[in-house]
Image 1: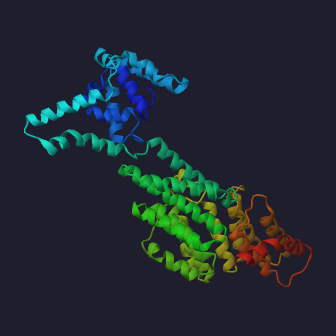
Image 2 (image 1 turned 45 degrees about the horizontal axis):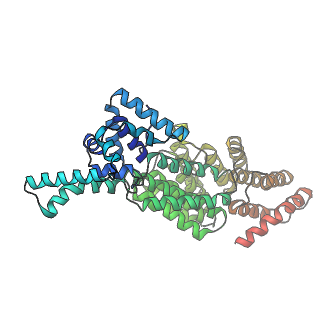
Image 3 (image 1 turned 90 degrees about the horizontal axis):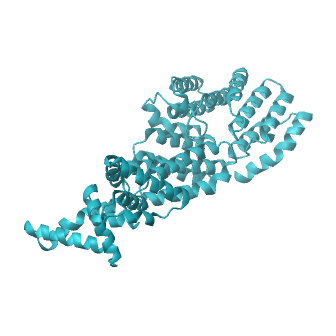
Length: 448
């Protein structure tokens, strides 16, 4: 059987295949004839799930000959531009006669409405009460149909935001800003219409995740105030539907702002309430513990750093690989190793920094635009601490010159820190680093 995402054209095709008048078809479906008129004339944007289920039931119970006739009409219409008007020749004699003498399509329905009102009078209902009894069911169905989003379109929104969450770490993020904002506006506008509850929840989740992508882009561009607003929107959307995972992911994004503003205490204040709840499983929980570990290392709290890193690693145990996706909606083992490298570097433990950096680089997709470069800069810092100046400069230069690297806020800030650590050093490798890093460092000062 063909898959039907019911439209007015499909309803007309089914009624024609069944050779029923509009009145007969309405009785069979369990709606009023005027509702059938609304469906067939396309006066609703998209049929509500309840309406579609009624039509699905009628189709599933139809005679195989009717089903075959319906499928031929729908397939021909979609594949070749077939005119469904040809199919109406199969309608019963009464309906065809009405057309032959020039009756408007809705005359029949007006006649049915009069019959229904007379029936109401027969049971003691008159005036407004009779009108309500006869008219309200169809108006309710029309209200349900108006603004209802199709499953197919909703899935398209969801797949799109997941793709954007992956792309934002693989292409220069600003290239996605216009697309993401346009998607957000469309989803927000759809939310402004009345939707089925289960669709409303999914739309809110999608809008929140789109806000998260915008926050990520703005953060990388150095627009921290606006990024904060978008991350906050993502958090609020997740809280509105009780989506703890998306809320934690958005909170991890928000924690980037004090992390890269060198405010580790602010990071811990932001995450403290959530971590007090002891989130213990999943990529989002692991990410929150990892960010807290970085903040503790920055404050030289070695024991707390080790504890949070251990909790981050434990939260990733026994996770379905499908949950460990590339992009900003998950947290993978390579990111954990990256955070270990950052923490060890802040704690002055060069050998452990180098080992963690090597583990991270072995796992990272080289097409990612930012984090592999940051790992290399941490590795370069560890080499510098060990006195391997030329190798440190070589690794750092590679980090900022790779054609995959996006020179955003995080990379420029880390490059500037490495350059400051080179103060007083001379040599060919140092000069080569500074030649490549000059424009990066100057852009950092401009944004600062």
